[in-house]
Image (cartoon, rainbow, N blue to C red; front, side, top):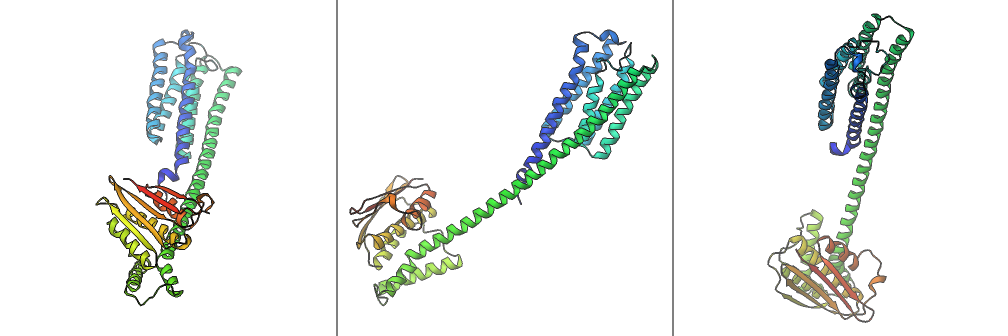
Length: 393
C-alpha cells in the first residue's frame, strides 16, 4: 500500500485548487462594492455607516474564512453554514438601506458575494446540505429585495432583475457543483494511474534486484566453486592433496551458507579476507604475490566484501584470459581508506572493446562503485592489465 500523500496527491492538489479558485472569486465579487465606496453611490442608502460597516464585515469574514481554509487545505461544514447564514443576513438587510430602488443597481453588492457563498457550499459540502443552503440564500434574497421593491411598486424591469439574479444564483451553484465533481473525478483517475505506475516501478525494481542477485551469485559461484570443480574435472587439480581438499571444504561451507541464506556480508578483517582469496587462487594453480601495508583496522563489512569480490574477479580473469600463471596483489592503507591493486603481465586487452556484462568490468562498475569506490582499469594488448580500486570513507 502506498502512502496517502503519494496515492492521494492529485486529489489533495485538486482540493487546494478549488479553495484557491473560490478565494479569488470571492475577492472579485466583493470588489463589486468598491465603486459604491470610492466613486459615489452612498447617497442611495439611508445609513452610510451601516452600508460601509456591512461591506467591511463581509471583507473581514471572507479573509478569515479563506485564511483558515488555505492553511488547513480543507473546508468544514460549520464554516460553510456560517458563510451561508451571513450571506442570507446581508441579502435581507442591505436592500432595506436603499433610498431608491436598487434591485438592478450596482449598489446591491451583496448579490455577487452571495453567489460566491452558494458556489462554496456546492463545491465543498454534501449535496443535500448544499441544496438546502442554496434555497435559504435565494429565499433571503427574494425576501429582502421583494419587500424593498414592493414599497415602491413592482415594475417589469425590477421583476426581471430579480428573476435574473435568482437564475444566476441557482445556475452558478449548479455549474460549480458539476465542475468540481469533474475535477475530482479527473484527480481520482490521476491518483489511480500514479498508483499503478508506482506499483509497476516497484515490481520492475524487485525483478531487477532479483536478477542482479542471481547474477551476483552466478559470478561468485563461477569464480569459486564452479571454477574449482571445473579444474578438478579437467585434471588440472589433484583433489587428493590437502591444499585442494581444504579449498573444497571452504567452498562447500560457502555454498551451504549461500543456499541457506546464512552467509554473512563479509569478514571484517580486510587482510584476512584478501589473504583467503590469495590462498584459494594459489590452490587453483595461480601464483599470487601479495603485499599488505598499513591497512586500517576497521573496514565496514560491505566494503570488505566489495574488495574481496573485486580481487577475486580480477584474479579469476588473470587465470582465465591473461595466459599467465602469475599475478601481483597489493593492498595499502591511505588514511582510513584502502587502495587495492592487481597486476598481471599477460596478453592484456582493449578496455573500450569489452562488452559490458558478467565478469571483471561488471564487477568493478557495479559492486565497487556502489560502495563509493573509484575504479581504474588500465590495459593494452601485449602489456598486461592493472586493476586499481580506491575506497575512501
